[in-house]
Length: 169
Ligand code: S3P
Image (tube, rainbow, N blue to C red; front, side):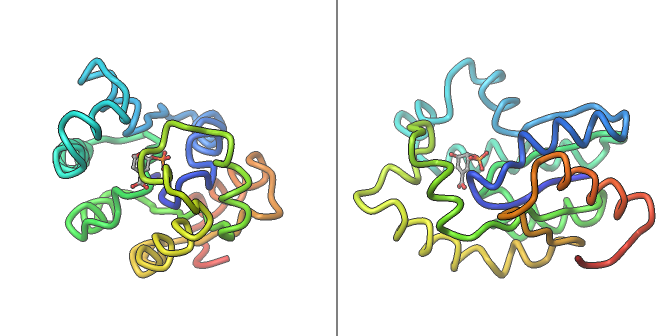
């Protein structure tokens, strides 16, 4: 199972709970990249630039094609690359966590570790990026609104859809 969606949608939190429900291993692509590089995402962005980070993401995504029994929380920008999205859709049940810009903003406001949101007007930046990414996010097998769902409820929905192959919300 792969979780996609914007920064702050809760992919990591929901993914960890979902992995427990399913008895799968949980992995977070940002964490794997940080561990392998021995530095934080913001350092990778600052020292090597975004294209370098996107290359690491794509390499990891390709590696994960052969993974089984895993819940993969992806970085918010990972499915924006069509090759990554296609790869996920081929080998995983892809669920998108969908939140409004206001909810996303409220959740990420106090956090500093996302280089793409260090803008003068973060809410405007979220709206802009979300609009650009919506076509990619909408290609998930399941799109689930999380504005009014707890992480556990969200995980339960995804587990049910995964087991029963329920389309859509
Ligand atoms: C990014 C999202 C981040 C991280 C990086 C870029 C993005 O992951 O991969 O800062 O482009 O949306 P989260 O979605 O886990 O915050």
